[in-house]
Length: 172
Image (tube, rainbow, N blue to C red; front, side):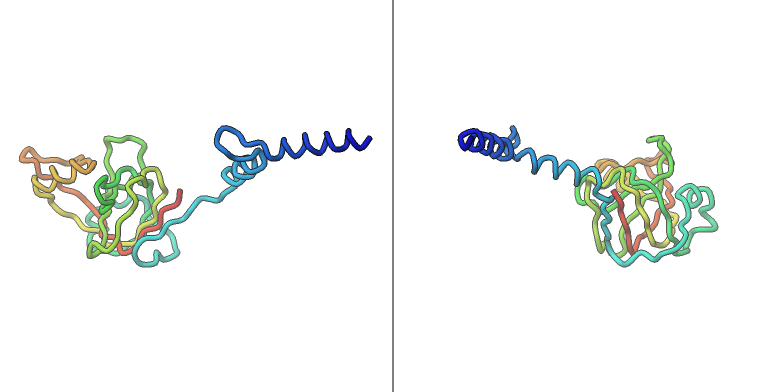
């Protein structure tokens, strides 16, 4: 009887201590899998605190630029593009159409950057709306970093509505 109990304990210990191809025990792998499926979305903050409150949509900013320009607003959208060199700008949009474009977000006083892998994150941005003409050389530079300009002129310049952010929250 003692030998059967010993054999059962040895087999049970072997199953618990089994390491799969990744080097994890079954128990550790199961625990990690459960944590990854129940983990809440992560929140990342950049720059100043983003205030609570109702936000406007990117479409609202882009369809009413005269009413928005010069105002500090809270806007929400999805990160569509990010500077692939430093993360010094991002584009947010409400659209799933990659050619429709969005609103470029830069950071006040070049004060922060976002991770280049932020595409797809939900963004909440607090900042000032500006309308500007982007020089052809700057358009070329930004496009080399992954930007898209929907309103390019024949000379290579582009007009855009953008936001100079004081604070950004990204939720993945």
